Every structure is written in C-alpha cells, then in structure tokens.
Amino acid sequence: EKGGYPYFMLKEIAEQPKAVADTLLGRLQGGSLSLDEVRISDDDLRQVDKVIVIACGTSYHAGLIAKYAIEHWTRVPVEVEVASEFRYRDPIVDRDTLVVAISQSGESMDTLMAVRHARKQKARVVAITNSNGSTIARESDAVLYTHAGPEVGVAATKTFITQVVACYLLGLFLARTRGTMYDDEVRSVVRELSDMPEHIDTVLDTVEPVRELARSLAGARAVLFLGRHVGYPVALEGALKLKELAYMHAEAFAAGELKHGPIALIEDGLPVVVVVPSPRGRSVLHDKIVSNIQEVRARGARTIVIAEEGDEAVVPYADTVIRVPQTSTLLAPLVSTIPLQVFACELALAKGLDVDQPRNLAKSVTVE
Ligand code: F6R
Image (cartoon, rainbow, N blue to C red; front, side):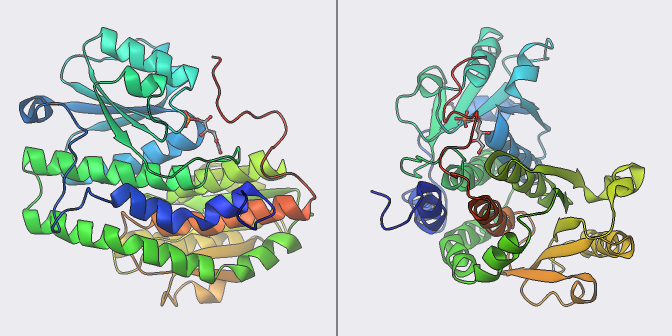
C-alpha cells in the first residue's frame, strides 16, 4: 500500500501533482471557476468586511499564504491566527466576518473550538479540510474539500499543498463575487493553477541534488530558513518539517527581520536555506533577498538557495542552488515548498529516523 515506497511520506510527496490536479478538478470550468460547495449567498459574501483564517501547525502556514493571495485579489483584510490563540483572546468577530478554518483532519480540537467560538458570534465559517464528514466540516457553513486522498504519514505534505490550492480557489471565488478582479485576470490565474501539477512534477524529477544535500547535512546542529512575502510561510513550513521529522533545531525568519536580531545567530558553516521570490514579479522583493543572502554568506553561512529557473542573480552568493520552475509570485509556494519537504524527509532518513511516525506526534490532535 506504500506503492513501492519504503515510507508513506515519500509516496505522499510523489503524489502531489495528482493531489493538486484532483483538488482543481471540476472547479476550473472553461477557464473560469465553479465552487458550489461555498453555500453562502453572494450577497453575504459581498458583505464580508474581514476574513480570519484559523488553523494549527502546517495548516496555519497554508493560511499565511492565503493572506497574501486573498488580500491582493479581494482587498478584504485577512488575519491569520493559530486556533489556540484566536479562541482565548476575545477576537472581534461578527456576522460580516468570514472565518476560514483550515484542518487536514477536520478534527483538531483547537480549530474546532475556534470554529464554535466564531459561529456563536454569528460569523460564517468555511472549512478547508481533507476529511469528508469530519467534525469541522459538519459544523461549518460551507466546506471546500481538498482532494489529496488519505495521508498516512504524520507530517502533512500533499494535504498542505492542496490546502494552499483551496485557499487560492477561495480567494479567486471571493474576488469574482465581489468584483475586485476582471474575468480575464481570474482566467489567467486559473490557467496558471492548471499548469501547477506539471510544474510540481518537474520539481520532483529534479530533486535528487536536494537529497544529496540533505544527507550531507545530517550532522548539522541547526538550520535557518529565510523568506519574504509568500516565501516566508514557505520558510516556516520548511523549518517545521525539519523539526518534526529530523528533531533538529530549525527556525524561519522573515528575511527583513535578520538585521533586527537573528543575524547574530549566523556562524561559520551554519546552513541557511533561502526561499527566493521570482525576479520577474516584484523585483524589489527579489533584490532585497539577494542582499540578505550576501549578508549571511559574508558572515560564514552555507547558503542553500531555492530560486526560479533562469534567476542568475543568486548564483554568486549561493553554495547550492535548487531550481524551481517559473511561476507568478503568489503561486510560487506550490513549487518552492516541495524541495523543503524532500530536504527534511531525506535528512531524517539519513539520521535513521522513521519519517512516518515521528516521536511525540499524532496525525490528528483531538485534545486541546
Ligand atoms: C505538521 C502537521 C501538524 C498539523 C496540525 C494541524 O506536519 O501535520 O502541524 O498540520 O496538527 O492538523 P490539522 O490540519 O489536521 O488540523
């Protein structure tokens, strides 16, 4: 049932192109968008004045990516909060708040409690989940299922990628309903989304050097991850994967925060993974991160750079360059996350660890 792979996690990483295609299936029709599971009336969706995304762990990282896309496309403010914090801080929620609860299992107690809290205050709740008929799905006003198929490995991989896809779909749907995007703008994102399974395939086909790199770093004490814009949540996700699978100290920072403290951590040989945004998008983001790479390298870091195909500006400052296909800035997490999953998985395997069953972790956290 592991389909010839020694671990479920390896199989699930490899299944991501299909998981993305399945999540898009039937929802991108004729180059436009159909999301009939959102059973909230168009009028109510036009009334929404704030979106709050609640989730835990990896699902929270999907929510952070959603913020960039939804705000950009809809101009509605989006807050993203870990469910356990949301619930206990007296959040400002009312009937014009759209709460998006992201949970692979649909059973995380923290997220469920946050959903109940939001509904009590009359907010409308859309669940993004991979589990049909799960508690969070049943208790929400609408459900957007990710069609990743069952995920056995404790670490979320294909469910994360499909959550990000579902968030994009929801953002486009809101933008269309509220009239903040032209039809051909929506169509062009939709077109790019439908190319993503192929792009992820390309990453998986070229990922061997990442495995070698991971094996060579099995003895490292710590790894830092840096990103900007949507690359920042990708960095957070890369660090979380490394913690949970390889039991290694891993931390992610917004690259702009470096000089405000974390740069003091840089010492000779410290591996620093940098997620670089497309130079063809907002070039200022790209230029800033190239200087961040220079800064850490000048202090002795071993720089591992995830950059778009054709981005030559990073080459002089990178000890290792990992290439991903060209995408628009907002959709880049669908490709840039993949090498980080492989990196964490391979590093853990090199340490002789069981990547499907990391210590102390459960697939579904049904206690608070
Ligand atoms: C990380 C991981 C966890 C879950 C978190 C939320 O690989 O699997 O961080 O993402 O426990 O779980 P769900 O999405 O089921 O609510």
